[in-house]
Image 1 (tube, rainbow, N blue to C red):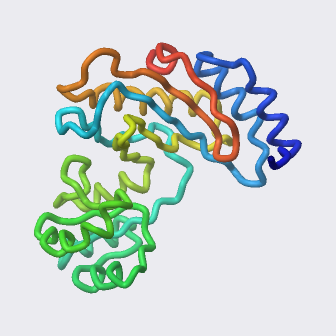
Image 2 (image 1 turned 90 degrees about the vertical axis):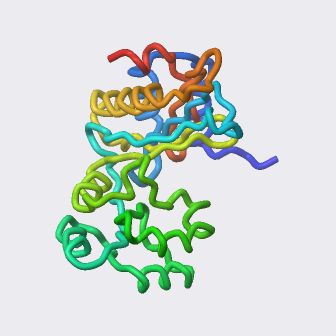
Length: 232
């Protein structure tokens, strides 16, 4: 069995016995023990009372974090003509049509968010097997299939986070950086939890928000009192 490094061991000891603590206490603990040589992301994991194998229990949505994510998001846009120009002016990193499709088919995917105008979907649809597993497929339900490409690009770069429940009923996302002020991190967390709560599907039975946990990129996780994470 591999020996734990001093930093990892110290972090685990600091987190020992900490369960269902307040959001503010959890953030303080995480920030105090995030000792990596880079600005770690604060990550949230939510266990939901759903079974995503059933269509009426799928949870998917988007939320604009009030204080951004602290991450530089690269945006690709499928558009032609004036809409392509709008996307470029809004700050899109890559804009194209058939040429962009060919680039993606070649295995070159240099973006974190993909947006498309509705008329581009026949082209984008051919990329389903490539973009789908990477959660990059444009979807009107989360605002990435739209004629308002400029607003979609600005939202993606300004702190918008998409979420989708995994097979085990868990949602993961980054909600800021450890360098953020604690109050701003708490505001982001509550905005995210609130968005997931509002996305409760019709088929969900019993307790919906079952567990909320936070961690830094390189640190252990700590469970947060659900009520503390949802109060506004």
